[in-house]
Amino acid sequence: MNDWTISGGRVLREGTLAEGDLHLAAGIVAGQRASGARRLDATGLLVLPGIVDIHGDAQERQLQPRPGIGIPTALALRDSEAQLLAAGITTAFLGVTLSWEPGLRSLPAWRALLDALDEARPHMAADLRVHLRFEVDNLAAMPDALADIAAGRVHLVAFNDHTPSILKKLKDDVQAAKFAGRAGVDVATLRQLADAVAARRPEMPEARRQLADAARDAGLPMASHDDASVAERETFRALGAGICEFPMAEEVAAAARAAGEAVVMGAPNVVRGGSHIGWAHAAPLAERGLVTVLASDYVWPAMMEAAFVLAGRGVLDLPAAWALISANPAEATGLADRGTLADGRRGDAVLVDAARRAPVATFCAGQLAWISSAGAARLAG
Image (tube, rainbow, N blue to C red; front, side, top):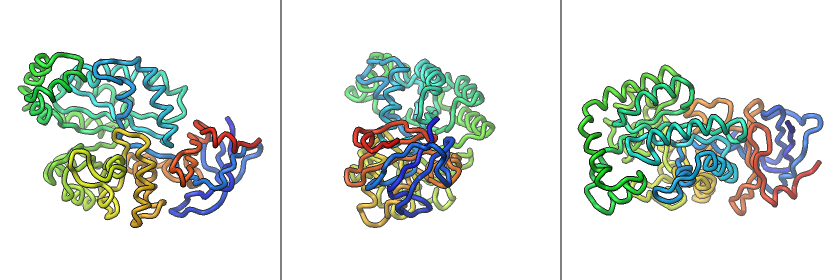
């Protein structure tokens, strides 16, 4: 294991950017240079805490680059980690949807991904965790979900309820074809399956309670997804979900914040200047303190870009904007060992060329995990 001194950059500590050195020793942020530490010249660069992505499902594009076309899971995970590191993301909660749909989001796909993660983790630098996005009508998969939670293979539980909207979209032939392509079945088969799932919807509340009990017993953070009303947020709060993901109305976000809960929205929303489906614009909500966490959602590089976009708007400075993608998501998920560059914290850091808004090097647990060609030229003995 190599120890490192990252010298000459502007380091983000305690909400302030200031020139100085960052020392990494034995996997953590250290107060002084370790004997024999390697040096990386960060002159002109920002030295920032590694990004913590609380909700991202971009790995689905590696698993299924075209509708119905699967790629071996181990290969897809290796590609995903490479992309995460190149985006400055050192901790990623992979949003894995466990749905009643066949194909990409099915129970077999869930099992394959967890098995591949177990095998890959010893060889990975990034900390890849599982964000179980459980479709609450997926009663057949409940035994697996409960067992995997109890076994420690899940790190965040989210309650998804997309079945009503899927049922509505399946009535349209064009929309139905999209869902069927992802599932790898014909439209008629998918419609028949959806009708069978809908028939058991009265059993959904009890299944949701069982899932919440299991997550609570395991000490896992819980999130609700796409809350449409304050009443819906209150329902999930009663189950123990302290994270409000992608609230559909500003008043829902305000209610969650009044209760001291984390509110998550997508970094692509900030980068694009608004939601792609017509919901609230995340940037002004973050500036008002109603959004506390930005997640990659479906584009990993959007997280870093969103922090710079927010800083450029002039309301939040870069340290405050960076907290939305580092300290705040770490706190929301109970990861007290990361998210800042305080002494004793996990040695996760990203060196950034601010002019290009681009990563130059990424360190995970004190080790150099990814470096650009420009960064490699800065290495010294």
